[in-house]
Amino acid sequence: MELTEAQKVAFLDKHIPHRLCLLTTFRDRQPWFRERIGHPDCDLLRAAKDSALISIRMFAEFLGLKTVDGKRNDAVFVDMLGGTSAHMEDLPNKERSVIGGLLRRANKELAHLTSDYTGQDEFNTAKALVDGINIIEGLLRKHLYEPLKRSFPDLVKEKPIGDDWHQLVDGKRSVPDFPRK
Image 1 (cartoon, rainbow, N blue to C red):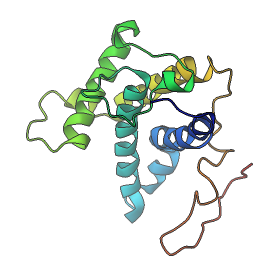
Image 2: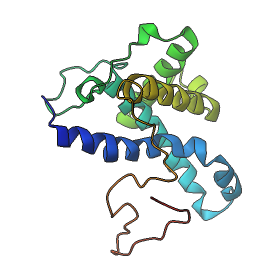
Image 3: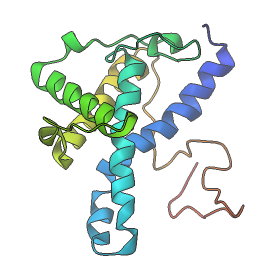
C-alpha cells in the first residue's frame, strides 16, 4: 500500500503525536499519579500503564522491531512515511531485552487473554515500562523524525488530533489547563 502525501501529513501531524501521548503519559505524569494514590481517579494510572504497553507494541511493529504474521493491507510502517526501519538485532543487548520482554508482556496481558504469565515479572515494573518508553521514543526520533528533518512533537504545546481532542461523551469539551498552539 502506498500512502498519499495527505495521508503522510495526517500521520505525522495527527495520528503519531496522538499515539505518542498514549506512549508517554505514564512516564511524563508520574508526579500527578503519585498525588492520586488513594483517590478514586488513581485508576487512571493503570489505564496509562496499559496504554503505554500497548503503544510500545504498536510502535515496535510500526518501526519494524516486531515481525507481523500476514501483514495487513492497511498497516502503516515507518518506511511508508519516509523514515527508516529499525531492527532488533541493531539494538544494544539491554534494549533488546527490555523491548523483547515488554512485547511478550503486551502480547500476554493486553493483546490476548492467556493463562500463563510466567517470566513476565521482570518487565511488570514501572522502571521497565519507562525504559521501554524511552527506547521507543529514541527510535522514533532516530528512524522517523531525524530522517524527515522534522521536530519531535511537543505534546504539551501541540494538540494531537483535530478540534475534538478533548471532546467528552456528552458533547462538551474540556478546557486545557495549559497553553496550546
